Amino acid sequence: MELKDIEAIIELMAKNGLAEFDLEREGSRIRIRREVDRPPAVPMVAVAAPQATAPSHAPPPPPEAPTDSRDILSPMVGTFYRAPSPDAPNYIEIGQQVTEDTVVCIIEAMKVMNEIKAETRGFITEALAENGRPVDFGKPLFRIRPN
Image 1 (cartoon, rainbow, N blue to C red):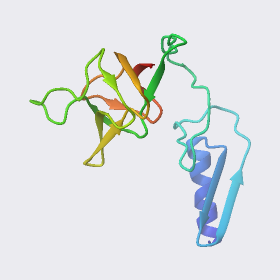
Image 2: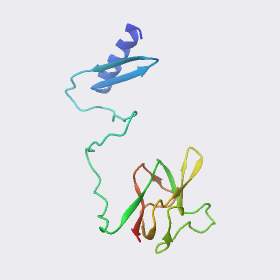
Image 3: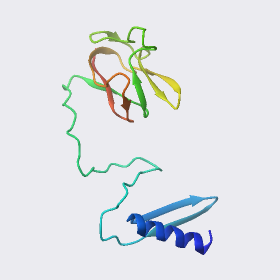
């Protein structure tokens, strides 16, 4: 990396209020840190690995699940669908018994439909995600009471 590239990175950091920059490419790595007197003008996005951070205005926590139940979590980011097509019945309904291999929904990610399985035995007690809406990694999709 040339000096002019490093200077451009530093200028962009100052312009956008960034405190840290880290880049690894083709066996070389550059990390720049600087003091920042004000909050960042642009929200920072974690790219490498998700980290537990407290948002500035945290949404209310999800309702507590009864101790004898657990959640089926989204394994990816995408759009949640309860049925394989708009005119088809839902994969599962509330009260239905499922096994580890039961498909409970699909999540569309990058135009690929991914079947999501229950991965546990039990009865579906609640649908927590809204059909046709985006879901994040780790977001609860269904609540299940193990049997």
